[in-house]
Length: 175
Image (tube, rainbow, N blue to C red; front, side, top):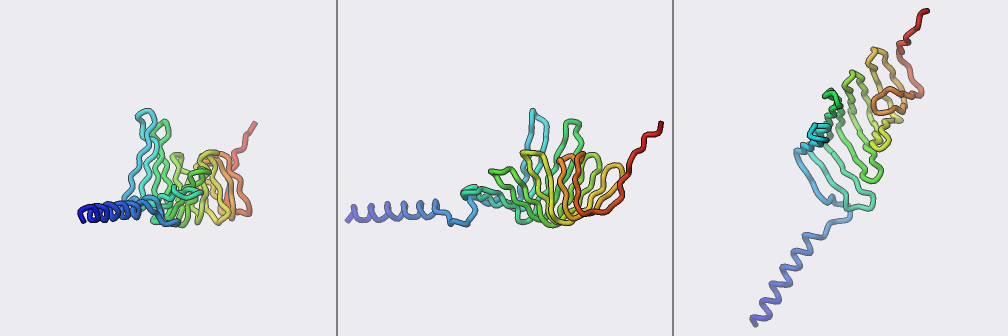
């Protein structure tokens, strides 16, 4: 009888442990709340990501992290100048290093470029941003642009816009 009781409790313990380890196919591997992630390089703060909620799907074949309640990211360059990116929703794809920012996307760079969009993709590996949705941008020289699509390097010194209108300031060289 004693052997039967020991066997029963051993099996019950293993069964509960196995249930805890089993994750639904579509469930996140982990959830985080009130995220305050800081990235430093050589002792200098480079990035600070803030989010109310993080869902980590790194257990899937195409792993990603979802920020269903939005994100706020602060970046500092070597001179200590700050740039800020915010959106109401974001997904970071681990394998492609692509971030998909959605709804009320705002980018304010250290040199006063201001971008507003409904959706913005940020290719971290190639340091490139782009969208195929409506956007508004104001450059540091005061010129602005509204359009349907654009491609740009992440510091907006190369900006390729399609189907747009706006005011561009062009510096003239006088002899």
